[in-house]
Image (cartoon, rainbow, N blue to C red):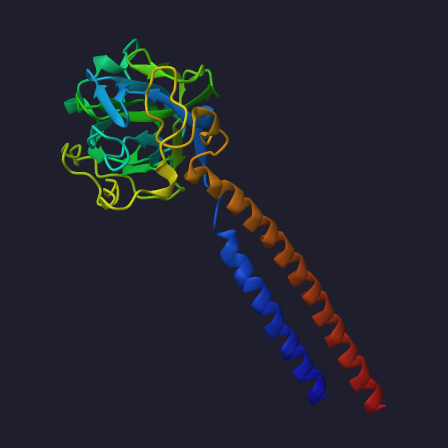
Length: 307
């Protein structure tokens, strides 16, 4: 009888080891995102860029910008914005680029130029001096509603930034891409990914004021590369676009057209976790059945011995 009891306790312990991790995984939910376009590839140049001989370049921007108006179905506090920017270590005549990211409450019939920076619900000024296709702008949580996102190049001479573009994926989204100097693709959608917050996330304090233009998150500004080191991903291309603009990575056809922003990869990882959850529950159920069978057998054996 003691052996039967020990066996039952061992099976109960094994069952608990299976069910506890499964319950922990059940609490995790897949990342919920809203992609404004299909694909994200090099596209909207916010400066006129020209080669003036050798590896020397000239850039000019007159406040060029792109904007996207969209409806957020849920609260959110992050937007993925893939971009490419001139690296002074790779191209002669290039300087770091000051850029403004702004999010506004959308106004009917407004274009990107109609919004004033001081009216933004969140605002970020940052300096870009190298490519960052995995950039995610994080800010205080904003409620569901209709918004306009705008990115503007502030540096007038010697710098450039390129915002990713793709094929529009939702008729509800509107894009303002007329104020760009160069466009190397035919698609006219600004490739943004709105990352919704998980339910229960604490909203922003309604008394908070928009961040000052100089208050950039610590991890948002790209760190300039050492003068003697050239990032491997920013080798000058051997072919120059029709507008003689310097490609910051491979030629346009090699741009990460199919690579969605890093944030969107979370959904795939979470889907795999959910499959693991189903497997864990099945194993737990089987273990419980075995446990009940063992106890019943033990009782029957004990009765036979008494007889």
